[in-house]
Image 1 (cartoon, rainbow, N blue to C red):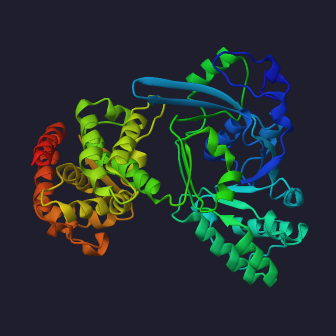
Image 2 (cartoon, rainbow, N blue to C red; image 1 turned 180 degrees about the vertical axis):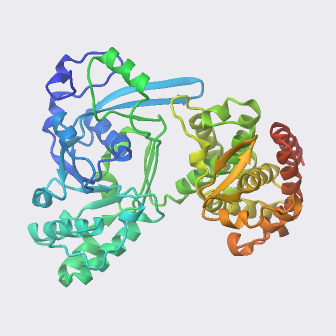
Image 3 (cartoon, rainbow, N blue to C red; image 1 turned 90 degrees about the horizontal axis):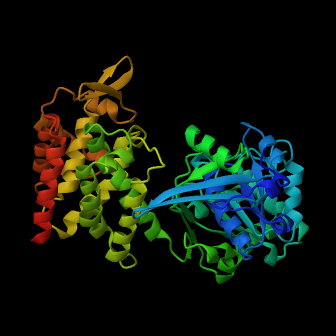
Length: 509
């Protein structure tokens, strides 16, 4: 049996949430650019949850902008899909299965552009969501809004808003709330700037541009949830045996979820009423602290742990967290060195430590296979963006060396010590070669013959790359060099244990 509106009546199970018939009658209130798993696993999840509790009461029209794949699977399943939530909270495993009924239609921008524009005439429409990748929020200067369809996402958005402006004769009450989820800082502000410039380039009248600026709300947002795609093959087979239906659109996600939306107008918050049914939706006047928590404690910890775990022979994050030494390192790194460095007037140490606990649970999630090889891609730029600011912040208020950051930095240098072979950059650990995908790898390959102390000094003093002389930080170069030598000897676990001991002693002082 295939999943569909008709087959729902024949699906019965204790651990499966199914939609009631009244949900299919709700009006279309959201236009969503993108069919990807993140949008379905996060915004559409929140909307579906709110609808089932009688709060938001609106469905989503999805715009498919790419040429890859079709809309057939959605049509065949009446736009229903199953979301399998798998995670860990403390020692409790989370397993939820939800049939999501938030999507009303999926329309192809290439083939059904006029139908998409007709949605602009719907008075119930209030919200636009997007996830078109970082490249999607960019200006295409020759994009014409009367094209069928316009080339870029901002062009399509502008055409939709212009159609709405005309349909409602410039009524300020009919502006839209636009919430991009692309992973760039200030995504809402950048999208608004591009749309306004594109309107000028298209020769739009002054009244429309004024309406565009004043009646529409472009909200910065931050999304955080791992949505790998389908369940692993064995788990999917088990699911089908238990629930007796097939779903070509099934997705899996972790249990943790965050959608932080920046909104300074209470009217905007009220229209995004789905926030009332899940603490994972946070609507605030300033979302910078959520970005800082994610960037430093989640992403930064991944980066500093990556090479250590790799050198210890761990393939996945979960595998590393099963190792007592690495798990202790991750916890101490977040709590003792990163969390204190990000405390500010709007971010307390308790908030940082609470977030660190959630990160630890996420790293331990037995249902997610997150490989260190994937995390190591563009390792150098990640280290620069995520961890160097924390290192500098530490030295603003401490004279002691951050031992946990030092060993993570040393492991990074060991990992990046490579040679160029057949146009590829190759490193080696434990007698096993691995490919390095990093724009800075050539710099390391040119210095592959340097001794440990000289290499560490060269790396840390590279102001052209780091924009700071890290070798000048008191005691840091010496600590990194000592750790580098120990790691090169293969004493990875001992190096971790030593730095944990030194970290504990320094925090007591």
